[in-house]
Length: 454
Image 1: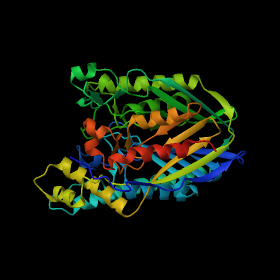
Image 2: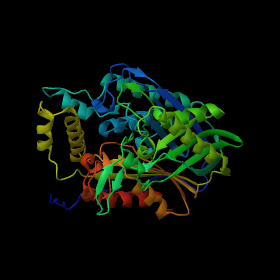
Image 3: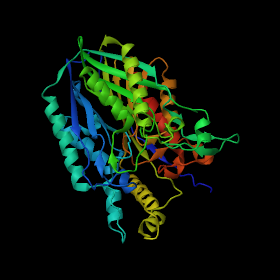
Image 4: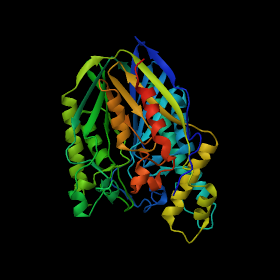
């Protein structure tokens, strides 16, 4: 189908440097931790899988607050599938209020496990108003969960400790990540490796384009380690859909590291939109522990290589971006899908997510891209949606002398964010990409603006 190219598909608003100083005032850091496990009967994965029937491991909201650099900065990682649109705005507003800062200085990123909630109240209300309602989320419980995280942040600020040093390092993760899109000789997708891939022929295909490195940043008060952040790009699921809540292999590795040294460890999922463990996971439930062990091994190896250094210049940057919806889809067409009771649940939910994003765009609400510069060597990048691994690799390639760690799965409203060429290549992800195919260039422009030097 020929696409109508809109004159302006994406608007990049001015980058705001919210704090920068060569010698910041005395910095302090605190950590927070809150249980955000949904109750029995609550929807999981936006109502696309079986609702909560039990709990294997609790879901957590974890993060750090850095104080002393003008207003505080909050970095939060949540064991949920997605937080989208107005819900993502609300999370940032509530955590900002709790930390005594502004929403622009808050990054909220999901890990994207699937036996976990999706928060999109706009999509929930769209589906609730139909003849055959679908429950996307437990609205009342979701509000209580957010209140609990905000209370944890507020309480933690009272116990902040001096932050004097950072350390950074990386290590290779063996046999976890593989590219989901198996390409044929003619440049088309010929197979899709899901998180659990039973097709042995697909598992035998090469890994494809991945970022095999797990990146680690730790925060220190002199010789005392305060907290550790880890970044790795893959869908973090071994299996799901059985109603048993789980933080899966990434969360298992994270919690084991926290127990190892008694220091809070926080895990962020990188640009894993087109990355799964499918090459190394056939769905056997025993593989969850194996994948967790491989992530844990890399975490330990990475930290062993790190060296502390004084924390010099600190800078927080914000880039509001107006991604536009795919012009091939109209709200009228999507509402027909949503209101047709003969249509299966999955396409109805997908259509509601798409309409939710359309309305966010129509209201002129930008998506917040942010970065945190720690000295001249380390930059933490926070992106929305299910961004493809190529965006993470692009960020590293543009700044080869800088240690760039990327977290994706911020505002989940755009869905997948492929490359522009991905739409012609086929495969699953473009069918669930709600932003215009021409979003690649503004994504890359925003990355450069956020990561470039002063």
